[in-house]
Image (cartoon, rainbow, N blue to C red; front, side, top):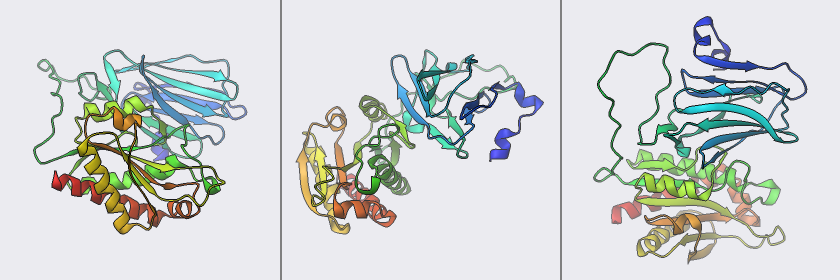
Length: 344
């Protein structure tokens, strides 16, 4: 995969804009937009841990590279369809920032955004199929072949749920520069809940449900975009997955908590998932509760927030660090969702 990424021939130079920089201490060596694939690739001299987030008004994707530096040349890359430009700068000492400006009339679906490491120093962001027309259609990558004349293009109508096929949004909490709760032995909530959420999504898809995720990678996503993903998908169910925490001085506090906001449907969903977990996962029961968490208060479909255990708890932290336990937790959450769907 890496060899193909680096193979740039004369033909692909027509499609790829490249800025190459001389190497110094851990510098951003290059960043380039491959318009044939709607893909941004960048490489630094030393290992980095990129932190990406989607920002609104105006809409742009921001990728921070802690520890990377830049020389004086900061010429922006002019984008293709859906991308106004890609620029680079240093908002503060020790951090280099890439900014992908989204063109007016386009939007980005955070659940489809991919930030992938090719190796410790080379990363890529796939904007396909995350980049969309504001009307809903996916933006195609730019092609070197001129297409034949066609009739006036028609954007697809807004998606409506299929009869008998529920739309479920799974929301892994936190992400990117926000690791969420940090517990015993440095256990990070964002990493744990992303793993559990991805497994839940896979089980539900295999069971025939239409599943959307608010994030599928370690990116930063504010609360309102999470709500908007569910609303724009016209979801039937919203499940936000988190891990709890108290002070590290309170390792005796452990257990499962499941929250809903106000609706009877939300309460039924919360109790069904909660009981499913208790019936198959070894964890203390701290109850089903009402709360005003933003993502379950602002969504209009039945919505719950599951706290899968305390990363600061002596029992829960040990369990959450165990991949087998996380698998069982994911299976139990998925069973609860499926049971709710069958009963409602």
